Image (cartoon, rainbow, N blue to C red; front, side, top):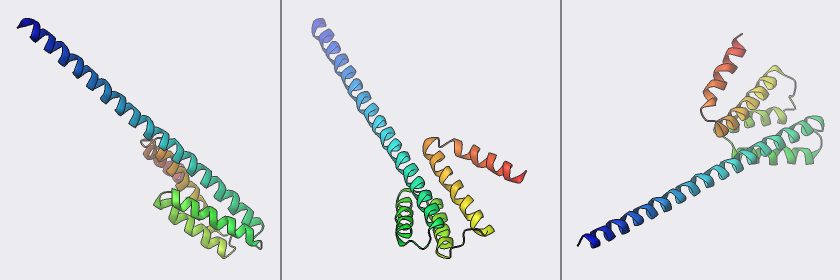
Length: 145
């Protein structure tokens, strides 16, 4: 009887260890997959933001060129698909300035800075969620000085 009990305990211990090992492997795999997806999203957003600003600056210099306007709209749509609500609303504001060919007013410059800040916050939030509050606080202190 003791031999059967020892064998059963050994078997159950091995089974329990195997289950814990399998669970740990699955969990680690899921975490790794989430980290890879996050890296891909950060890269996609960064690329979309860069392409938007490239297209915007090109349109600002060549506003009569319809191809530049198309690239601007296409890049803005791409940003809207990938970004936060804050960035989307700021993109809309910048596009409205572009439609009016208003690239020098104080309102445009403020809107441009708000969009850049929103894009930066978007990327910081993805990369280091806890750092966003610190970044916003530092930015507010800088502007109040």
